[in-house]
Length: 76
Image 1 (tube, helix red, strand yellow):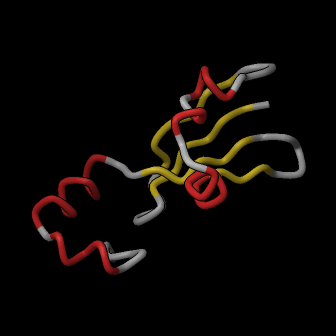
Image 2 (cartoon, rainbow, N blue to C red):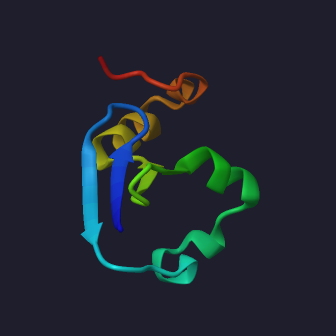
């Protein structure tokens, strides 16, 4: 089972962790609300975990342009 991190705004691959098993607290998932988990975390048919996160470039764009928060994607 691997964990893949992808930016939810631009689709950039942010990171990848390989491993046999993970616990929620190891990945920090225990700090998320139930709603955040449902929105950010998906499992594929192979048991891999796909996490929607935010890359540094998109985070900087959001900080400079707070109005971007109203859109799911803002980088073309």
